[in-house]
Image 1 (cartoon, rainbow, N blue to C red):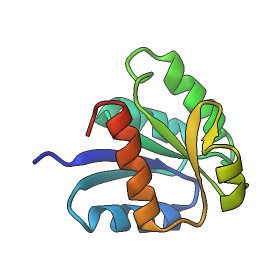
Image 2: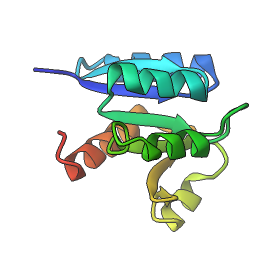
Image 3: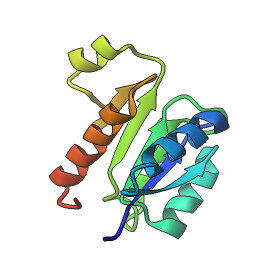
Image 4: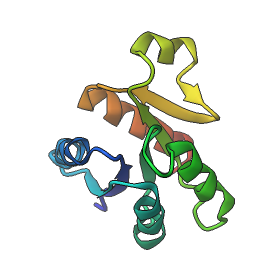
Length: 129
């Protein structure tokens, strides 16, 4: 069985490493990490992940800018993105229907089970899972 490829783009290296370890623990995911937008875009092109987990607030290039660049490129525009943010609270996510600029988002901190449920739901919607 082929593992689902996930790319985590977040300027906090510890967060990337914890998320990678948490997702890979079950053996269903292969997780790549990037700590800035430029590196993340290059890794999307190199690894072709099934889904991108993208921090909104990052120095140099925001998650919104990364998402826009990925959406502009025909070879990366269909890769689903889940925004991750500490800028909103869990109840604000629910009040907003869980979407930001047309992309689903999850408030930090989150439980691994919550993240996996969201990833699987998005991939099912896109016909990937």
